[in-house]
Structure formats: C-alpha cells, structure tokens
Amino acid sequence: MEHPGFFERAGPFSAAELAEKLGTELAGSGDTEISDIKTLGSAGPDDLAFLDNRKYLDDFRATKAGACLVSPRFAEQAPDGLTCLTTKDPYGAYAKALAIFYPGSLIPRSTHPASEGHVHPSATLEDDVVIEPGAVIGPEARIGKGTRIAAGAVIGFRVHVGRDCYIGPNANLIHTLAGNRVVIHSGVCTGQDGFGFAMGAAGHQKVPQIGRVIIQDGVEIGSNTTIDRGALRDTIIGEGTKIDNLVQIGHNVAIGRHCIIVSQTGISGSAVLGDFVALGGKVGVEGHVTIGDGAQIAATSVVRGEVPAGARWGGVPAKPVRLWFREVTLLRQLAEGKLKIQGDKEDGDAG
Image (tube, rainbow, N blue to C red; front, top):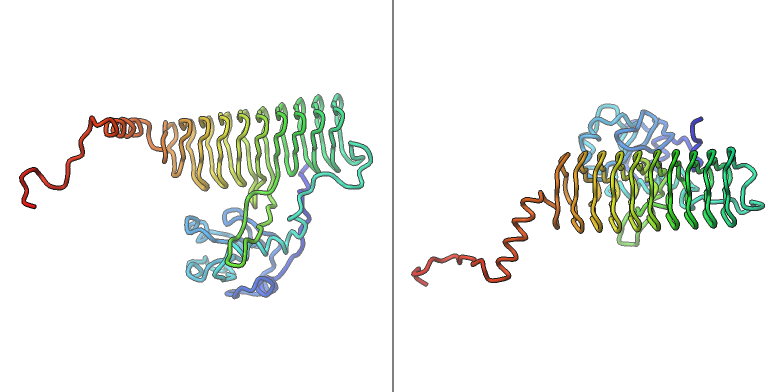
C-alpha cells in the first residue's frame, strides 16, 4: 500500500496565480497548471521546480517541469516550453511556494491532541507488538509484528515501523518510514525539520520541509542521533547501515547500504554517501558533496569535495591519506626546526 504522505497539499494553481502570489515575473504560459513542487530532476509537466545553485544548471536545462523559479540570469537557458517565474531570490520564492502548496507543513505532526490513552485508535499494530509504559503511538501509525516500543518513545502521525524492530526509550519518530529489523536506541530523533532558511536583510524565512526520513532494513542508530527529514527529496538511510551515538544527519542526505558512521559526525544537507562508506569520529561532510562507494574518511576530517570510490582520505580539508601524511610530516619538521624554508633571495644577492 502506498503511503498517503504526511502533509495535505493545496492547489492546483495556474502559473499566473503563482507569479502573482510570489511576486515574480512570468515568462511563458500563465495557463500552465501546477499541482506540486519537486526537484528539477524529478519534476513533471504539472510540477514547479526551482534553481538557486548554478551547480544544477544541467538539471535545469533538461528539466521536464511545467514551471520553474529561476534567476533572470539563468532563465535564457531554460528548455523549450518551460514557464519561468523569474526572481532575484528563487530560494525565498520557493519557500513561499511551499507554504502555499503545503500550508500545514510548518507545524510538525506527531500525535493527535484528542488521543485517548497512549495508542491512537486509528493506529495499526500487528501481532506480538510490545508497547512499554509511557510510549505514545500516533494516528494512522503502523507497527509490524514482533516490534518493541520502549518506555517514553513517540511514534508519530502516519509513521510506519516494520517487523522485529526495537525503538528505545524516549526515541521520537515523526515523518519517518522504518523497515524491518531496525534498532533505534534511546533519545534518537528522526523526521524533525531540516535546517532550511532563506536568509534576507529583513530576517530569515523558514523553508517548509515536506520530505520524509526513510530507514531501510537492518539499520542501527545510536543514542541521541538526529536525522532531519528531507526538504523535497527524502532523507535516506540505506540497508544495513550502522550509525553511532551523537551523529547529525541533515535534510536530503542519502546514505548507501552497509555504511559505518562513527560518533559526533555531522553530515550536511544533500550530501550523498555510496555503499560501504566508513566515516571516523567527528568527521564533517559539507553539503551537496558525494563520497563514492567503499571510501574511508579518517576521524576529525572535513570533507569539502567529491571523494572517489574506494579512496582513503583524511585531514582538513580532507585529501588522499598519502598527501595528508606528507603534509603533516612537513609541518612537524618545520615546527621542530628540522626543515628550513628558503627565502626569495639567494645568498649573495644584492639588496
């Protein structure tokens, strides 16, 4: 059964209506009917997309969207038939558009205030589910056979938890779909708002986050880790991945299968990790970068660029380990006075 989603959608709206509501210029057909907002790559003829980062210009040139929020300097590169809503601030307009299409998205949905008892009557629990004292199961939630929900945990509105799972004490799952044999330890929070704000001189406008968190089969997540739901795309934790305590995973992050992520790591929004990636403790990963299959990143490193599959990188910023070790050795020798830096002038040069 297809999941019904976590937020109700308004609309459809014509491109002309949206241009008026958003204060943008209309270039193209104002009669284009828009029913939803999606990314450039996933949008179809009745969807609105946006371009705010020149890194995605190729996606813009190839998009199948019916309309797109875009800066005037990029609008001339639009594909044939695309209706452009031009603005100097596409990201700010996108935030306003999300609030128009999803007016309830600024308030996370956890449990219903009218719930009687700890399990909402609309929730579905299969056989052998154990609900410990103080746990709360929200409306339309689904919990699979053999799963235990520990004391004080919250399973929010329409959250699905698969079979033979363990959800630890005081864990909070909202806007989340979890597979089978998932272990989530105490204090984990999933599905909260991604950290998205359109910055401006008058203040910072909150960008609604309408994606989900998808946790695939066999994932284990350590205590007090937080995983933000996606903005448009889902945040995805791949099958068999193991995550330590105190890890922060931002919105739209896609983590592959059987990855290892050690404590105090932070992964910024829209980063992509391939399968069998290993991140040491306190690694920082910049947003929108890709780490290839099987790559390993040493503890306390900061990844700021693309990492090839199978690579071993370390340092700040991270680089291939051989280069990093040479750099560290040279700096130590310099600090110990064992390495001299030759000046610009040779001995005997005239002053």
